[in-house]
Length: 307
Image (cartoon, rainbow, N blue to C red; front, side, top):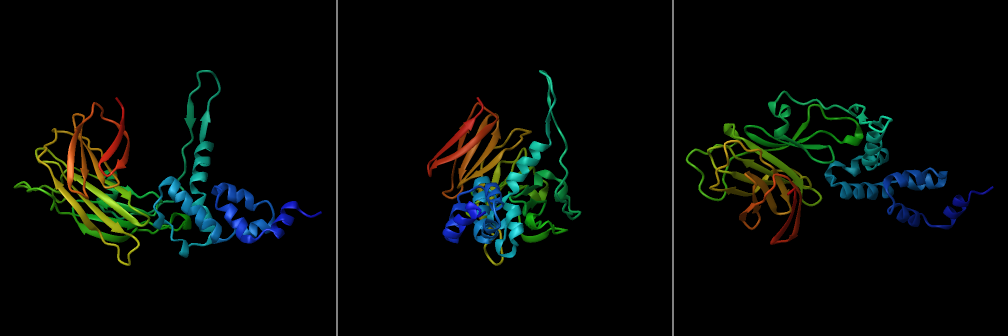
């Protein structure tokens, strides 16, 4: 007996099946490919799974250069595209609910998918000085001397680089707007500082470094690095020096959204800096928690916070 799907496959062009697959979630493409041998052959090509991976990167804000599809096998691309789905299923399978009206939820510890050996440099032991770029391949660190970008290896390949490969490094030195103080403590001098990293476009990262340690003023720098270039190099976009001296102890919150940097300044005070236009302003908000930041226009920002 002829399989109806097999008969339909023979009547429709391959391009149409691929177009249909591009509108499906990766887990649905996988299920669809298991319907018959002919469909599985069509679904087992890069023209199906590369768009699926690109869609997942947009949906989950994963850094696209984390997945060099030209160098990856089809199985590796499938693994990367199905990563978020498999992660959610694994978390769900490790979550248990005890029976009873007053039962509490419990969890079973997850085992690591892989481990990557790092150097003995202290920067890898300080979580506040490192940032794992979404996608799992790249990490940004800043120690007492340098801002560095590392390649940990493509996650889907399952063969981590040990130790991580250094992609680019830049010496950190303040040269921002406004006169620096007579004593200019930077991370080179063990200052208290914070880092935030976000994607800008498909192949570019922006890095914000904020230095703030009593009794010296708040200062910041923003760097950019393009992974699409032959030799990725950190370039400084902007620097800012303010006259504001923070409280004796402050837990900074730093975010980059578009061309804006948002930083807590203590005592329900926030700074918003348009580092492209070179202007900044202070906000008084009766909250220490900001949930969401959205750019409405080049001159307006929406903040959602806990009142």
